[in-house]
Image 1 (tube, rainbow, N blue to C red):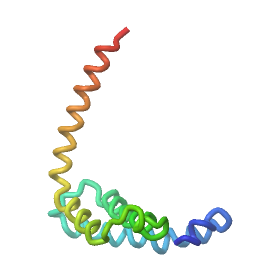
Image 2: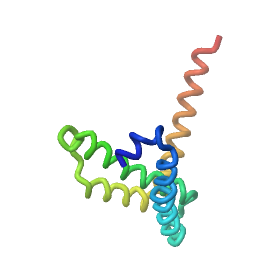
Image 3: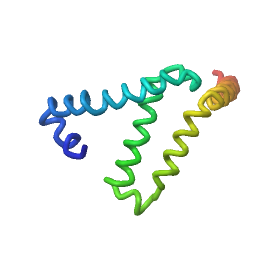
Image 4: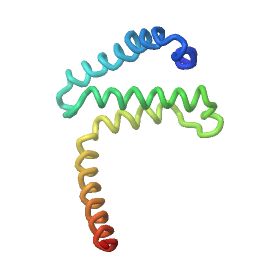
Length: 117
């Protein structure tokens, strides 16, 4: 992956091939899994697959390539457990986030009323 990223500008076809054969295939596989489990209640399985895979890629980059395991160690099992927990409890999180959005809107309205010209 390191070489693909480093050489993607010079060899865009190589980067596109990697994206098509690895990234796209992995995302489609995970989407099919999510879609086969409607009890997960995902609004957008493709976006959820992107989030899931992105978390794994971020982990590898930060922990393995950028020496994060020496500076900010995080056990792989903790990441996976948290991702699975996030996926399973995502409906609850969505409801909670709606409450946060409404709270933010109230704060924003209050700030705007204070700063009216």
